[in-house]
Amino acid sequence: MEYGILGIVLFLVYKLMNKTTYNDKIYDSAFSLIGETEIVGAVNNPKIVEMANIYGYSDDDVAWCSSFVAYCVNESGLSVVGTTAAARSWLHWGLPTTTPKKGDICVMWRESPSSVYGHVGIVDSVGTGYVTLISGNDNNAVRLRSFDSSKVLGYRTPDVLNATL
Image (tube, rainbow, N blue to C red; front, side):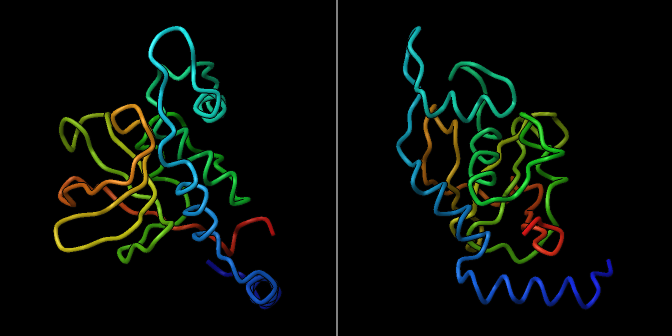
């Protein structure tokens, strides 16, 4: 993809003016939400409802891991256009990466690699055989937890050159 000189200059100016990267902003937003938990019964956690509203849901009794990631990405100033409430939709956001870093997006399979079910979260760290994520709807809460890396379908990183500055 060709960005041209102006695009590269604008990106470099942005980086010089803003020492915080999109990855930092996504991660910081996710980290600030650790501990948000669904409320059992008819009452809903307003923060989770705010996240779920991104995809049109009005309570916290839905699969909201994708909504959590969308909320964090929105907070960073990036768009979530093209994503849905389905975790696997994040395989089409941003750019693929084989060297994930803190603040990138990790998409995993649930049930089987070929099923439609998945889980998505924000990368904290990656090690041999595991990935540590901050994710929503992990046992009905936002948690920092390690997962077996054999379940990873892909990692995505913000496409900062195509981002609106």
